[in-house]
Image (cartoon, rainbow, N blue to C red; front, side, top):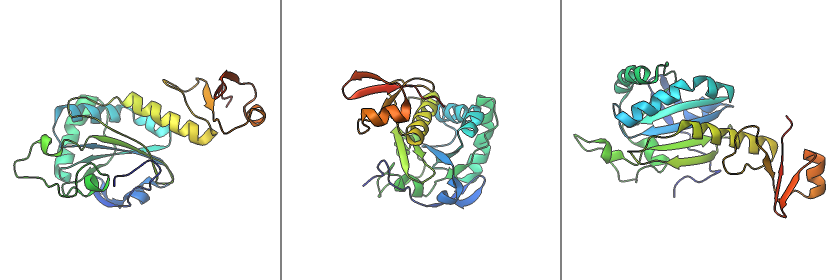
Length: 217
């Protein structure tokens, strides 16, 4: 059975280009994003790592750590970072897990238990290792998404989803389609009109089960 929303992620000890540590210790009291790749020195993944590097200030503003996963070794990761920084035009200060034994990929259900890396492998041998996991400070999985090899991930959407998670969990609300910070939010159906008025002030009843309001802080 794979990881589901609100499952606690496995506390694996991982080797990275920045040292060895347990995932729970590394997350600490922060939010975290783990994003995975099937092989170093591949074109789409290099642009994605570059995009993550460009967003360093945005991750920091949101109290969020980022960590990459690729099923190659530490020395390859260190060499690859030169390409990542060239493409992204920004330092790649985040760690990359060396998952050449597939421990992380299997634990996060990106590969079946019997999977292995054949000699002379290509990225196609680990193609499903193209996922994003957003993890809360409670070490629980909050969101996951998986992409095919040919479609680069939109990290502006990852940021937007992170904002939505932090807002919904922190404020006790939900966010509608295409929501961005500053837009109206949805009051949960479990909150009575009286309690909604006390907690949020004015709100709009769009449908009996859909009430929206603007957060004031």
